[in-house]
Length: 392
Image 1: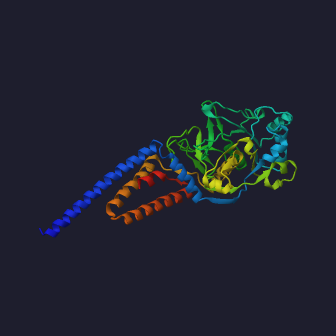
Image 2 (image 1 turned 120 degrees about the horizontal axis):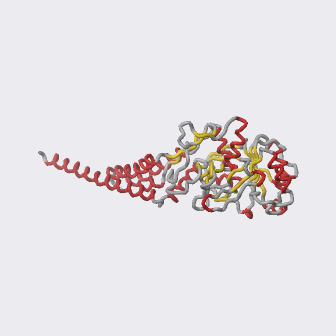
Image 3 (image 1 turned 30 degrees about the vertical axis):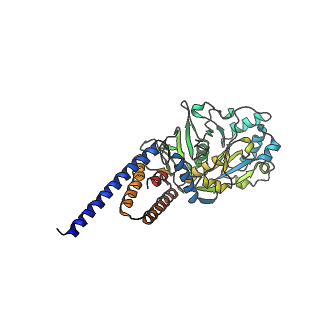
């Protein structure tokens, strides 16, 4: 055999040996990032990437035609006082209900009487079935706040609970809250259901009885503790992913002073869901907003009533089929997606020569990864991106 052929064969064998070694290292890297993800070490990175990708694909849906809010701000609190006496929400409800909304959510706790006006408020809540009160279930914490007494046992109250991620950011919503004893609908679902009731639409279990829930054209699968970029979160109740960090409609917010003075345009409330709540820092009902929502709002926090309104708007959009609930891959699919990137990186590293080529491939691969994850998120699929990026 000529020497050139022997040298060529040796080079091929050496190259294959290097490739096998690279693939072995890639397999080890895959196991490393999968293990780190399962242990929760990458959750903060995954959630940060989720927020930034949401901001990158953010869609302003324009004026909302189904939801409006009545905002009680700091100047109003200075005049009306805080906590509000029962006469104030009674007057607000009377004004709003006269405009013909489909449902009105009083996102202010009224579990204790605050005279004057207690009898007036109780009579109004009991009489008008469009009114929905708020309660706080809290689960294992025990900090339960019951609904207004006039609504006890009526089914016209919803839980204001929202699952919190680290940093007090809300990315998950609730359809139902379960404290181990009772199950209550979330405030957003109660209001969305009231809006849809005249159309004959109500929350229902799917026909296959898999534990999933349908609302109009939307099908919701309960969020599990390790879905998407989460590692191990409390998935109690029936949770779903909120999309207000990547798409929002512009929900009209009418100042309480204009409503009480009769200056509000009645058309703003006609045939809508109207939420009454506080947008004042002193009331301490606010949360940190994801990057996309913060840019949309022009501030880094979102008030509770705004968050509830965004959740109602999302449920109604999805019930109408205008957008879809955010989905995640099955655990096997997520593991395969994550592991494929270090394996591809191993193949690329084995056959590329020189720092310039490797660096170019590294940058190109990350661009493809994050670009693909952004496109997927825009299509309502959440693919992990931090773990695959580290693997690559």
